[in-house]
Amino acid sequence: MKFNINCDLGEGISNDAKLMPYIHECNIACGGHFGDTQSICSTLKLAIKHNVLVGAHPSFPDKENFGRKIISLSADDLSESLYDQISNFNVLCSQLNVKMNHIKLHGALYNLTCFDSRLAQLVLDVYLQLNISVKLFAPYKSALAQLAKGKFEVIYEAFVDRRYNQDLSLVNRSLKRAIITKPENACSQIKSIINKGLVTTIDGNKVAIKADTFCLHSDNPKALQIAQYLYRKCQ
Image: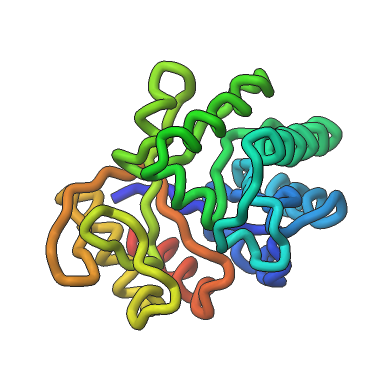
């Protein structure tokens, strides 16, 4: 069983260097919820060293809440912020002679574009304005994924360390059992998605899902143990 693990990095968690050898792709915070030129370049250099594909990880411009809360912004202001985050990231990639492989939204913005078609279209319009050839990481059946078809190569993403609701939204982090911390459970979730096309929800139901890449959060307290287990024992 072969699968790709991606990880949200460059977020000030201080475990980037330890995680890099065990992942295939990384999503680098580019100034919205975290990140500046120094942190982006440091993470890019680590990725280059370990031959890990790199992607921009834009979000609501909200470092105070780490991009995990919905904030009120005009469409123009959000578009401008996303454009600046991704274009600045691409400039730094060019300076280090590495190609941006993909874009993956972060936090509240990621979750909202699963169901809000208007917001998903706004995001896609920004991507089109950038005129960059990249892949898009998005959840299966999300509004973003469906609207992007024919315009971008869509890579379906699922999570190895988060529990799902019946509608394939992620269980709120504040709730018990929302986060998977046992490596064996993370591996079981991946195997079910790959082999059966199913994920077990927080309520014990099985829901259809597809994924081409699997995300592990670097701020998971057991992130390194999960990454090592998946790399050594789950493939």
